[in-house]
Length: 276
Image (cartoon, rainbow, N blue to C red; front, top):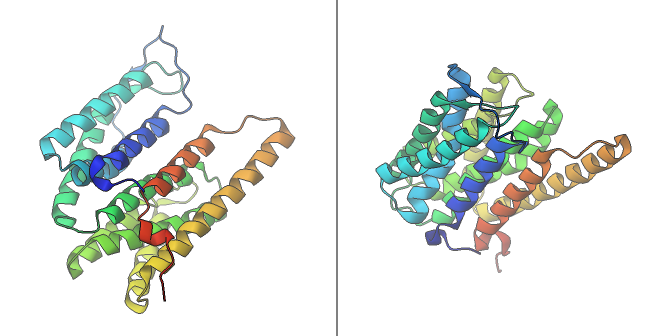
């Protein structure tokens, strides 16, 4: 597995964000589309999207908050510039600012909640899995599909945050915040229900952490189960697309890349069964 201090998780997160924001990768460089509309919901989603990258930049490279802000500003500048040439998208100054602020907020969260944590590999996993949950939420068109596909990875991420945080209050804040964020992008479910799902994930995580002495076993089962479900949904979707002679959506292979990224950063002890 890749070592957390070499920055690979942050690079993987940046690539996932690029894939999400530039989908469907159609550009017309002879036209420019720029918009100055302000949408509060979009601002919140943009901030949430860049939080994992800010956390990873702080944890994997121990960068200063100012440098994290500049890196995220540069990345979102590239994204907005390319989006301005996309027929189905447009550049936006508010997106530029909110993305950079999301990265900065992620850095602040890392400093506040994960400072001196010896479980940085679990922080890496929780951040990458958060992005994976976002893509699953965007892809899912029904409530059942969203809940079934999202649940195992949501549990993996929440338990990973619990493992990486020290102090009762910090654990509560970190796990609750992660649980709510992972449900933000489930577009097929109304916002109030998304909050209730996040609360359910939080309560289940706290309960499992209290009654189970071997949390890595739960993490292993949830991680492998989530991977199996993803592959099952992918095969089913491919069969449906082939029968209807339609193109397979871009988000499926973006999900696949995010899942591969999670496998690359997963702590070794999660995949290795305990002895004895």
